[in-house]
Image (tube, rainbow, N blue to C red):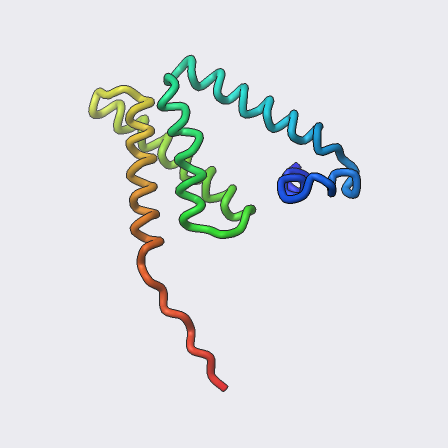
Length: 126
């Protein structure tokens, strides 16, 4: 599914060439996003769902530049923030959703600080 989503995301015309319909992939993606939002809003609320959907992807985008690693980093960030947020919620006696989003914000700020550090480029020797 990843290959089809990536190909159709960049060029809708490649769908028939890889044996799938762009409309089918788009419909599946929209159904998955709608289900995520529907379930999340019931448990967290509107603003927290937006933060939980955007936070891991934004953090991963700061750390990587390719799609496959970005997906892996995004999942990892979401898992770390979820587990850390539940622990913070339990020990600080705060709302779980707010604690998870707080952890996401901290991870994003850490990634932004890491991305802002200038990197030395290797010197080419001839």
